[in-house]
Image 1 (cartoon, helix red, strand yellow):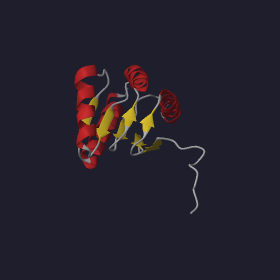
Image 2 (image 1 turned 90 degrees about the horizontal axis):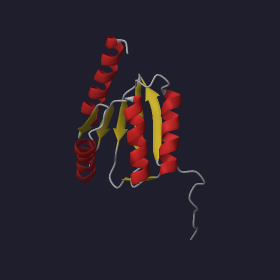
Image 3 (image 1 turned 60 degrees about the vertical axis):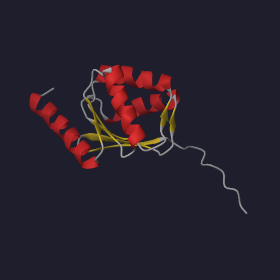
Length: 135
């Protein structure tokens, strides 16, 4: 039986921009460490230098975000103001999202969704609102 090694580089996330919305998909069971969060923040800044695009975050079951990484992200999102549509079908992940919103009271718009279509619609509305207000 052959034993395959893991890939040399395995990112715990995928990120791309489409129609003015940043799509961030975390890998199932991923652990987001501080170095991963720094890379994510750099990529978001490169894809959206205006810092206005909403983020559609897909958060699957089993994802772990280390506390230091969570604090870094909270500081950066608060400073940049990206609206975040937190989408998950997993009950535990949804509860984590609700708890994050209640405890940390983020300065940026943050909503938790159980349906991808609703999350996408909300993100698109945030993008349109920003365009209308000319911010």
